[in-house]
Image 1 (cartoon, rainbow, N blue to C red):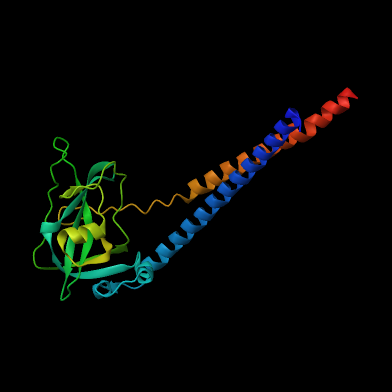
Image 2 (image 1 turned 30 degrees about the vertical axis):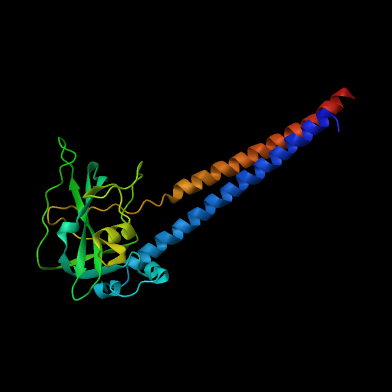
Length: 245
């Protein structure tokens, strides 16, 4: 095989591979968009279901059962464990930096506790390490919220440190650290501001439009490579041959 022919075979193979890969990436973005759309529909459907009793979180929660409970609204009754409160740093609400305040709630007449994302408190502009001012009522309280899989997470450059101020919270590690029998889900408290904390929760950012945009880009790239391959390896050589004749 001549060098020219080998080069042509290589270019065609590389072009076909590029078309295949970009087309598959476009299909993957469409599938991600479909998954997110289904999740959004499930979130809305679960939120519209009747209010659950907190006892539902005291039982054995298999992965399937947890998936069924996600985004359901639940009413909890118990007492706060303020000594185990955690503050998730660098959280923004209404364009202000601050902390998400998470406190375990010991369920009434139950061994299990549930970590509640109670709300947001502002950061001190002069002392970023200063914790926000808020109240933790003593005695039995009732909390209404939304069941979530985990607290909104942030990218962390290093390993998670133990202490009141953190970037993220892993339930398994937190349970081992505190010795609490924690439910494998969290509850995001709903309702107006109270106890010095705000709850203007933003809806989950599913970004379905971004996936569609990426899909268009990948499919567009696939079409461009296909056009270039057909033009330079098929049409243009034939036109050159005709001119020479």
